[in-house]
Image 1: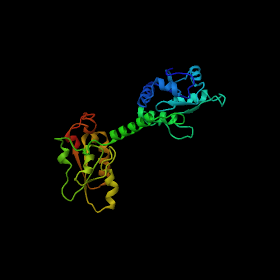
Image 2: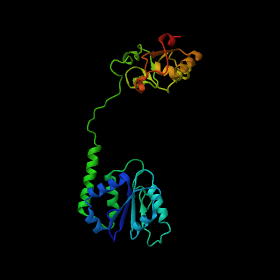
Image 3: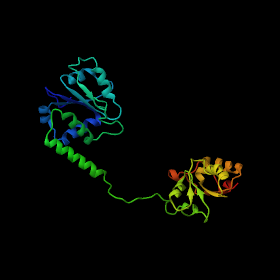
Image 4: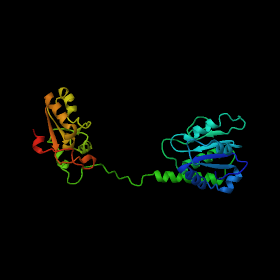
Length: 279
């Protein structure tokens, strides 16, 4: 237990990383030990969040008007705390807030990590009914300005994904004038935003199957389908067999590079020669 004095009104219970964030938040607001004593703030650092030890919690809660629970993700401490204080007399039981305030509105979100700035705003909000100062208001404005500056984009340059230098896809994914191609799940998916007359994509092993459904309802006589040898070995050959069985007019362009390039260039799981591909 730290920052403890008598005649306090607001208690803060926290643990782990959130404790350090609370200390930094208080520092950001300019609230030091002396001001905590004068205003009426006490902080309890919990060493083990589950199960929550009740004796120290009851001692800490005695005399408080409100307890703010600061913890990330699930409300582990908050849920136990409300249970432990449930049978306290109403006139002695402090209000407990954390993930939500007493009106059920979101206070400290559980979707991601908490930052000292987020915690500082909540502490200032809970203090506001009985204490505020120009210094705290100035610090809050500083934090808001700082966050806006950090969120502003430093560069407007867009780096559109493209094939690696020297990759055969740079040329193999081009199609003759008047033709069009279909993409899949491999690196050749990026041809969708290139000027290469390539449309649609599918899951691994579904390359070309989309054309089986489209072919009877279009005047396009033929399409190309890009496919890597890694995907072919994994499940792409099933799509190729389905296209043959359906007798659709499609040409598979299989990139043979002996690697699963889209996930880091690992070797394919087995032996696959060019003559085996062409059978």
